[in-house]
Each structure stands twice: as C-alpha cells, then as structure tokens.
Image (cartoon, rainbow, N blue to C red; front, side, top):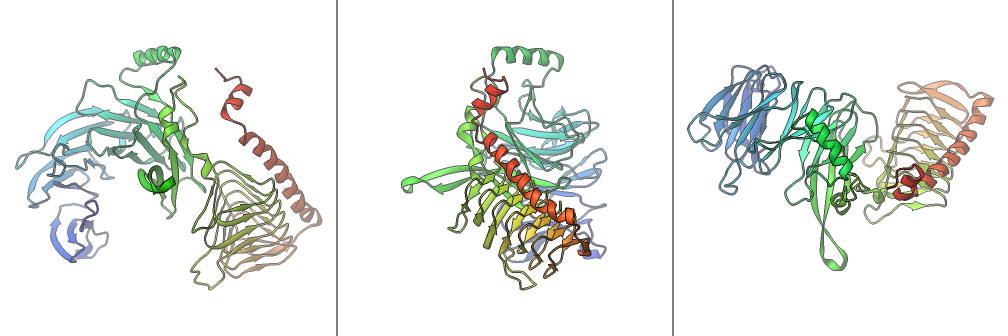
Length: 505
C-alpha cells in the first residue's frame, strides 16, 4: 500500500494463472478497479512503492517503473537475492516532498549494499555509492523518513549499522545488539521531531533493542577507550542499547517494530506528545510501550553513556475503559509485567517478569498468595465461539507456571498450572488439581479436584499423590516469600543499587 492512499500493489501466491507470483497487480481500493497488471519472467519477491517509483524485486533482477505513467525506466541486476531484500526511500522527491531523495538500496556481493539514485526522469538509475556494510550477507535494511540514513543488519545479527549515504566522509555508527547470533526481523527509525533520534531493532529472540543515534557525552576515560577502539576498527563506533524490551512468551518468532508519537490530552486540557514503541508479533499480538524521552535525552549526560531512561517502568499498572487494577496488601508486580483494566490482585499475590494480565472485556480476579510466573498471559475471552463467560477467576494460593496462558477460565484454590500450559475458554480446574506442563485444556473441560491432567487435548492421567498435594500449598508459600524479596530489590532507586554493587561514581 502506498502510505494511506487507495493504491495497493499485490502479488499472487497460487498456481492459478490469475494468482501466479509472476504477476503484480495495482488496485484502486476505493473504486475496486485494476489499474495495471504487470507480468515478470520469475516470481516477484518484494514490491516497494514511494511517491514517484514502483520497484518489483525478483531473485536476480529489479524492475523500476515510474509510478505516474507505469513506464518501465530500467532494470537492475543483483546477486542471488532469494528473500527479495530491498529498501526504497519513502519521500521519493514528490511535489509535497521536493527535497527528499529517491534512493534504492539493494544487496551486492558479500556484505555490501549498493545504493542507486532513481530520481532521473526517463534515464537509467545511477549508482550513488556502494557501502561495505557487513562481512556477512545483509538480511534487513531500512531508510529513515528523510532518506538520509540507511540502517543495515547481517545474517549474523549481532550488530546494526547506520550509514549516512550522502556523506561518505562520516563514519558509520555501529550498535551492538548482543553477542549471540540472532535473526533481526525489523529495523525502524523514529519519526522526524522525536529527540533524540532513535533506532529500534526486533529479533527472533523475542527482544526489541532501542538505540540512540546521537553519540552521548562520555567520561574522558571512556572517550580515550573509544579512540583506541576506533584505531583498531576504523569507521565504527559501537554503542550499547539505550533500552531493551523482552516480549512475553516464547522467542523464535518474527516481529516488527516502530516508534510513533501520539498526541494526548494533558493537564488543564492542553496537548502532550507521548512517544511509544509499538511491536507486532507473528502470532497476532500487539504491544505498546511508552518511551520516557526526557530521560532518554538526558542519558549519558553524566558520562556513563547509559542512565535510567528508556521504557517507562510506571506503566506496569494501566487503566482500560475507565477501570483500573485493584491491588491488595503486599502485592508484587514486576517492572516489566503489565496488568491492564478490570483486574483484582489479592494480598501477597505476585506477577513476575514479562507477564501480561489483560482484561479487555469482563474482569480478572486473582486470589491471595497466587503467583503468576514469568512470561504468562492471562486475559478475558470476549466473543467466544463456545459461548462461555469472558471472566477469568483464579483462586487463592494458585501456582501458575512460566509462560502459561489462561483465557476466560476458572481455577480453584491451591491448584497448579504447569509451565507453558493453556487453559481455554470455559475450562475449570478445581481446587487442589494439577495441569501438567504443556497441556492444553479444551473449552468447557473440568479438571476434577485431586487429579492430574496432561496432553493436547488434556485428559485425565491419574490421582495426585499425598506428597504432590502437599507440594501445592508449599509452592504458593515459597513464591510469596520470593516475591517479597524481589519487591524489596525492585523498590530500590538506581543510585542505591549502584552503590551496593560498587558502581557509584
């Protein structure tokens, strides 16, 4: 789709002639009229649009068209490009963006990237430059909105680099995502007007890293170390992430990310701008995190290059539709957890790191001393096909294992839900029952008191042994004590933590 217009370009994925992947169709969604159908010698792997150009990417060749007339301007040969990797600047030098360049980045041999200037009317594209971006083949690229900066990452996925393509004398900026190889699935710049400028990177490890483009101020000793590093690795300025987000649930799935600004009503009826990090995962989940830009802007001012900025930790509890979470005494909600909407947490209950408890419709009630371990998802189930109630009710002293998922269900007192188990709409786990790790309890199923159920779909396995029944209560007490310890540490200011660890300046 060309921005928010009615122009859509699509490619088929079937064997029928009208759905062949060798055919690209331009459609006006407002009138449902086909504007043009273009045929190619092999499958179209990617389509790029801006206000002036249309680019169809094949495995070994790119076709460049004028968007207004759909005249073919030329073709560009590439090395084998099975993923259809390409990046086209969004502005394209149109009338409403006269200063914006029209540049196309394509992979070259090895880890190089070749940048073409597509602005010439009626002539072939010119090679603007060739960037030696990485040693390994480049797998993802992204332009900023002005078409001045190009971000790249390689197959190894340990670093991201930002190149100023029209200022060859400037050094590339390097940002280290981590030391473990990963597949970076998305790179995205912050929009114009956000200060400082940011780059976010999503990987298949389930993490989002946010980097600051402007190098922060450094302590003199740090600058000396940087000078030594630059002498050994010329052209690179490695920087650490400014902030990181670990998504709830399992890793290994693709995600896309973006930074956006939203205008909100501030105190006294005025307007306030809130900058957000938005992440969409391949399984259809959308996450939004508020970025505390005043703290981000100040990061590094003390010479440390870091700071307490980044994802705001005070949105662990968030209202929804006029209803806010209600907490009993001595409740622990981890800084990276999210409790949203009409949720009640009983006294001494705990919600550990990366868990999401979300009441979109109906309510969620969690009893005293119940623990929700890391990476769990608990929500209501509106519009269920099975016709069950949307509410989720969880009793007292319940243990919910890591990465379990509960949807519109009922869990009795002292029950145990194993790691990565799933309870679907209308299911019931009675008091003192146990659901095995990885089990899927189907809608409407009742797990009787004193029984163990497992499998997909979950079925009765056997009765609980005496020592297993005793463990259910002991598990809840253990996690209540553990949560109290985490609550003490989480409440400490960063200055105190640094002093305790001998890191204070």
